[in-house]
Length: 61
Length: 256
Image (cartoon, each protein chain N blue to C red):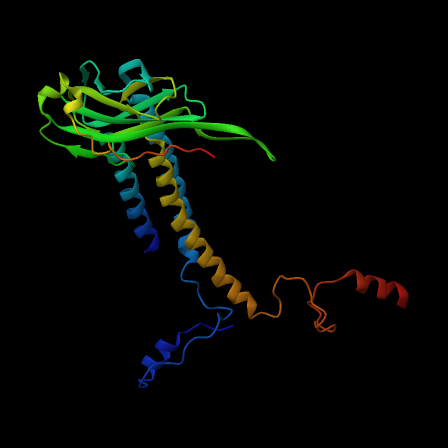
């Protein structure tokens, strides 16, 4: 019975892997923004990035 | 040796009330609940790992790995004003897949942060993310050290086909001169990290089941007087089945 459960589990793992590779999943998360106006191409500064305007890392060792 | 019968079966056979006492240890002929399955599970695991390797080869071979945009840019950290810009429109073809964005820069004991937005020209849908490229190095009492890298790579997941452009907004410390960087976007790139995760997901249960099976057998042998272990000083010297030691041989020579 454990063998049958493992075979089922293995099929699920490989199936999930195949889906992830085909659909282009990634471990990175990005923010999705909708309805970006077409005027951004003419005026890139008008777009407000989610990640902008924070003080970013400026140091080293 | 007889036939092993569990306490529960005995209680049931004699119609006894309550539960039998808890089992202590493993008896010599007590059947293992796992040994019959372990070899079958290892065989299944080997089959799945072979399939995993085939999938790795298949996806690596048939992935598009198509470069959709590449460009070299320069960021003047001395200039004030709007630093953001947009690239030319490029087409992403095929089915929904990932887009790998690679940023390479000549930063040296410096950093650059890039606010990216991958914007679909037709639907107005955007993927917003930020990436930092920093590289520091030097010498201390332990010798040479380095931190970071001049190359950064990120995979944007599940990007549908369409016409896109990148909005890029670089940031860095003011007054650090010009920073050159290049951006390359490649469509449909296999993610090796998932294959690594699948390998772990397939191997760990098998390792756990094998460990449990071996633990069971170890408990069985712990009850035995003839366990295959090194003899201790407390062993009975008259036990004919104990392993022969060098001490026995030298005793025999002295006797003769």
